[in-house]
Length: 388
Image (cartoon, rainbow, N blue to C red; front, side, top):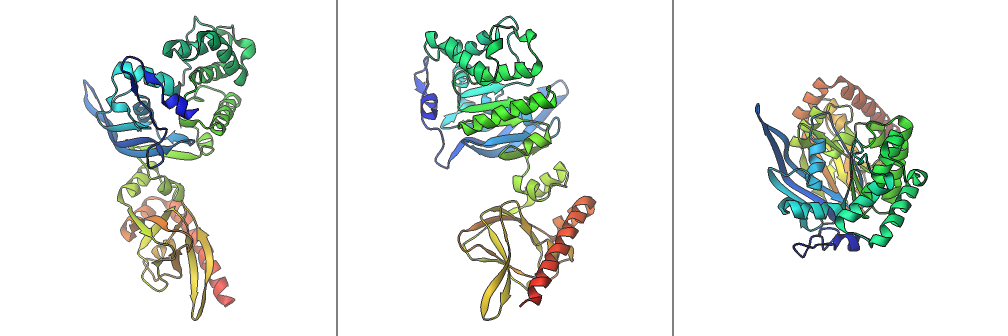
């Protein structure tokens, strides 16, 4: 399916915009140094501040953040609805930021399914006609097949019995499902949804989200802006935006009790580190002066035993952390050895004692959470040592 959609040509230029579904590094969507500045009578306002991000085929990405953080602007960069002030947007091998308006309209119609918060169904067309419209606009599918395809899409969203009704004759939840059917009309590989459940009751919102989950099972890639944290947690990946920048997702996962601004501050200052399989990251007895968060692979917390194999206390994966015991004690000596797992390399991000102390002073909740973790880990350590 993807190869067929991605090889659609824009008739007026004869250019095939998406020869490959993914780039060489496996990313379907790539954003590089993306900046967006809006200007008005009050002056310039920078909404996006040098965004770098990669999204893979088949991901269900929830884009979250406070009002005004840049969520909608970010996805509008991907669909081409907004143009970047500077930076690059690639979908597959297509440089979206370089397409003309005519090229964008054709490319977007064939490759992007867009779902808006306020549905935006044409009020004087029936649901069936609304779903057929993208096929007519992009001249996709044989004209004799379009009605049957639109009817099938309405059946998939449980609206077949309402096909000949106007949007005003059905509920908000039903209108949103009709909008999703319309977004799927040209079988696009990517669905972009801006607060698709924002105006729905909880039951209707659940129905829309369940439909998205089924689309992911069929191989679609979905980017969804949402303010609903419970729905965001069900996506396969969450992208948090604060003040026009993307918060490191592993910082957000490891330290969820920080404010968005605190997470962003940490994200700006972390140092990425790579360790080969079995390499020691921190040695027992050395001064502990860093907080580590795992971003890829696994690390093992071990207790060395003279002349014997280390005792593995725990195995930590992406989003988990270590180093907090020593930092909470003011920079004491490491109570255990931490090494990369022997079966794979591990990537971590780290920050030092000063940043850690500042966070503890600013967030009492985070301090309390980490204090509980420290108590638990020290107890586990002592328990294992007593059995040696």
